[in-house]
Image (cartoon, rainbow, N blue to C red; front, side, top):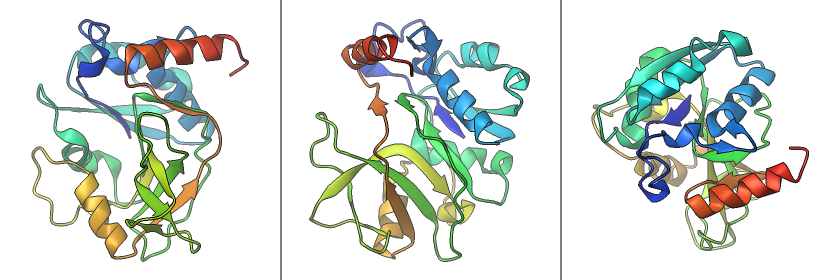
Length: 221
C-alpha cells in the first residue's frame, strides 16, 4: 500500500494544484519510484489511498498495467483519515497476509526484498539514520532485531514497513494515527526492525524536494 492521501501543507504552494506524491524529482513523480520498485520486487497487487486531488493520482497510475501490477484505490474524505485510519479502511483490499506500506512522500532506493514475519511479530519497520529535521529518532533497534521504545541510540522510522492485518485488531475505523498502535505492539515485543543504510529522503518541504532533485539529477539513481 502506498499512502498518498495527505494534504501536504508544508509543501504549499506546490501542493495547491498537485498532490504531493505527484511532485517530481529528476523528471519523475515521487510515487512512480515506489511503484517501479514494488513491481521490480514482484509485488502484483497494490493499493493506493487518496484524498486531496486524488483524481490526479488515479489518472496518472491508472490500473497499474504499464508496470505489470494491478492497482486498487481507497478513497478518503477531504482531510484524510490519518495513517492508521487510512490503512484500516483499506484492509479489505489488502487481504489477510502481511503487506508492505510505504509513505508516498519519501524517496528511497530500498528494494522491498521478501521478509517472513514470525507468528509473534505484528510489524517490521525499516529504520534509517536520523535526518537533520528529526535528530532524536524514534526507536532503539535491539540486538535481537526487535524495536524498543526507550532511551538509547535511536533510529528514525523511514515510513516503510511490513504489517500484519492483526495489528489493527480492535480498531473501529475513522480518523486515527498509526503511531499508538506501533508503540503498543513494540511494548509487547511484537515489532522487528532493520537498519537501512541506503539512500532515503523525507520530502517534506519544498527545500528538501529541490535538494533531492538536484542530487538525483547529478547521479545515476
